Image 1: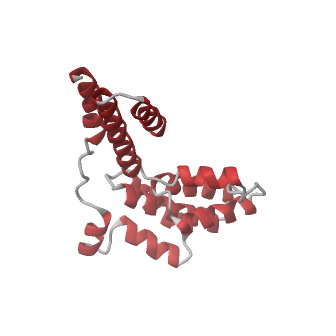
Image 2 (image 1 turned 135 degrees about the vertical axis):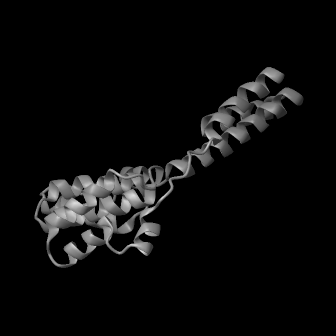
Image 3 (image 1 turned 90 degrees about the horizontal axis):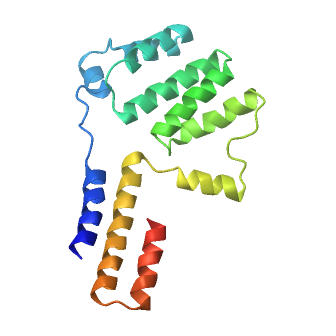
Length: 181
């Protein structure tokens, strides 16, 4: 019994460890100094100087940024590449933005536009398998970790019930929660 609890607690403890927070976010810096690379990139982009905007935003990627900020910069780099009629580069940047922020609607929309401009098939064909893939990949790493922890907790509860009471019902519940996890 203790061995089962130990085997459940160790993975849960390892999975629940959170990464250290990143200090000095772009938003905080931009509020203090309007001449940050991000703001300079925005100004250059609005003026139609897309290569200059790209240079400023690429400079930002070398700095410590949060996942949301990296997604924003990748999205903006995709927009700059798209405006320069480099759809394959834009596809790459939009894909990076979506990997960081899976529910970024504008990035998903722009990805489809860039794929169409490049003559590629749509990433989401609208069929069942594409919808299922989109649903299963629409979680951030933190959300996936929390879902896994909840599934492991249910699995542990089912194992505890099976160990305590036994019976076919608890065994089925243990197997079902194992498959869920």
